[in-house]
Length: 367
Image 1 (cartoon, rainbow, N blue to C red):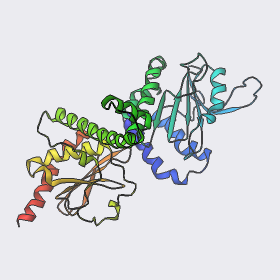
Image 2: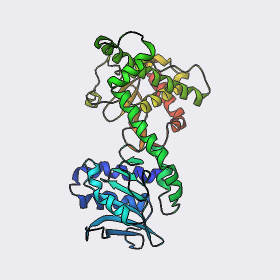
Image 3: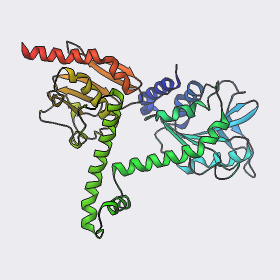
Image 4: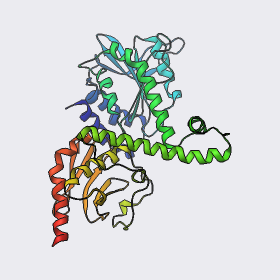
């Protein structure tokens, strides 16, 4: 099983069990130990590899314990401090990690609540743990670009030098990505002012700020839609794929009241990945129906692709609101069959089934 699959399996377990995990000890047993064993590959029951309740006297602090120490060749390499699941991680939780990091040979420290893993090292000062993590792994939303870096810490291919050398770049790229995502979601005044100054020569008054805040949001949506279209064109080698428009990126079409309660729009957050998946499905069935007949409606638990904006004519459902993604395909009885996919490109493997679904609806209409 690939590392990505092991992460997806653990993420599914977390989603299923998080509601009943109420203590730190339960978090360690249910989530953290499986991460150490199934993801990193260490034997949690072998004290030569994993030391629970690791103790090392630090200055006047005697008998303090840290939750786990991972040992290789007799040397402590990774320290792990755990907090209760559903509790937000804060730097204050890492006080013991700071002290133990300086007292051992460990170069990697991990602070976790079983769902989010913050990885630290000593980039700023030798043998002193940094105040900010160089890598954050969120099992509720796994960034696949981080998987090769996690692999470097696993038992089979442990490569500390490689991950330390990449840590500084990982640290700043991660922070920049989160900062950019925040500005795309809700632009701050400084961001609006910066972009406005590039295109507007007048004074940045309150009226101008209000006007350009909306324009920045709209321009951001259009920029993202352009990126989606460019990726699809590159993937298909075509230049005539129906484009994602700003209207596509806005609220979903609701010309007909949905039958399912799940199509309620409260709390729905349409992602770029869902829109990319929608464009792939639309490109696939383009040979059978005109693209303007293929629409989408986002829901809390899935993203629906419909024919003629009719929820009784579902073409596909994209279940992307989880670590393991699924493509839902509909048969003649309109029963949904979910197929696990690791990437959007795998949607093309179901092209024949998607086209057949559309042809069935067209045949029923003709009859």
